[in-house]
Image (cartoon, rainbow, N blue to C red; front, side):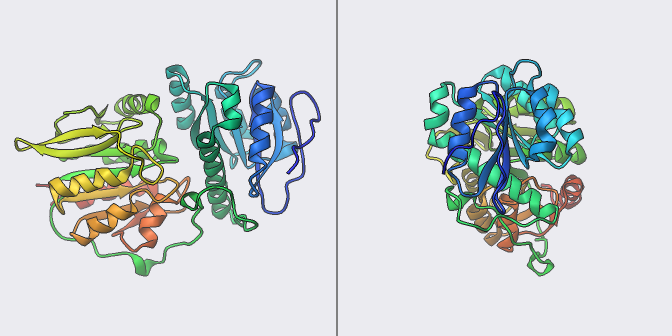
Length: 383
């Protein structure tokens, strides 16, 4: 597949082929724009319809190129990504934005703010420009998120998901395209719940904020696995603490679980819970990735079942892939409780869709109902 021809120093354009997901790249480096355009267009599901070197040029060309997904750098001359973001949504409220920058604490903080302003996700850019063209992990992550986010957006807006030649990404990240029917909802199990466990990925920071705000408080510990790079999870914990009634922290080895506190798995570490001297204690490890993820929801849920048995209330929020599905099957077998976010309000209905379509859920709710549903179900079930 040939690279689209350059129309000027800062932008390119071509007509999208039938059904492909339309992407625009915004980065001040001509090298990075060229490299990204080359490998993105090698995926049969994607076409790069335009490129820009700064936010101002993006805004002036959005209507012409009509992208579905914008890959947006943070630090650019003339107009940076964060400044451009709200104006992007004024031009097209339905467009999806993936922030992409080198992974520094400052950029992580800016990206977290961008997520709170409506960006769908973040992908860490390799530090070396050459790695942008050679890092398979970066390429796979970016392609997977573009396809899943764009596919979910089309389904919500009545469009058709790309159905041409299969994407180059792994089957793990193929978007779900099957809606749940009401007959697949399980009865809510009787019994008590002694811990609340939440798994989330793409779109998760916004969803976690909404759930914890609506939840208000609970008299059980809350453990969260959110797929994020290492620089992000501590910032996420601070953001949630400042914006909700919960004390949230990035989990550390040896933390003793306390009722009403929130523990977030640190980036690049699986978070598990073990029992020591009668106390429930956080244990971290860098074991192999599960479902292409570290942290993964799977080891968190498995460890909770070892410690709490069936006394687990699990929630699966928006995210791509199927992380948490296998452990959720076991959780339901032993009598635990599970609810999930619905398709309409999920940025990507991968993780929640997987458990819903497997018939494991006792409820599939829109985001604005999940906090209240958790509180309602936990009442009378707390130890």
